Length: 162
Image (cartoon, rainbow, N blue to C red; front, top):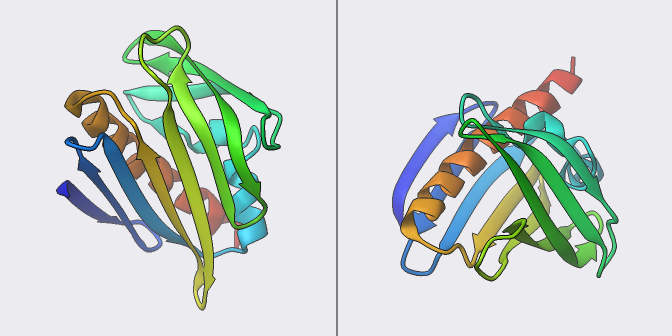
């Protein structure tokens, strides 16, 4: 994989991209329970952390979190309004969540986003895979977005500990 960056924010966040396969993988450890982290991944709470300051900001999210259920999000990205949509493929609370991901009206097939949550001694290891992205530019922007979003989620979870 290429384009690897690592930052510290209550633990390490890594995000890599492979433009040849159209895949982004990101990983982070969260000092919380799988149940708490799953809730952050599957509720309107997404609006608090699906962000990249100055680049995109998720302002709305709704979802019917069950296999076959739909989800939708909207916000501002690059100074323009955006809308995303998808369908939940796998819901194994609190260990795995997978759904399709596509900008509304985009002329390409939906990508797939999979979150795997694994308990460990210091919290929960989250690994996400965003696959089926259409080109190198989208892969890189998505990698950077997941990196900053996971750092933001780590900050939110860490603040809950007091």
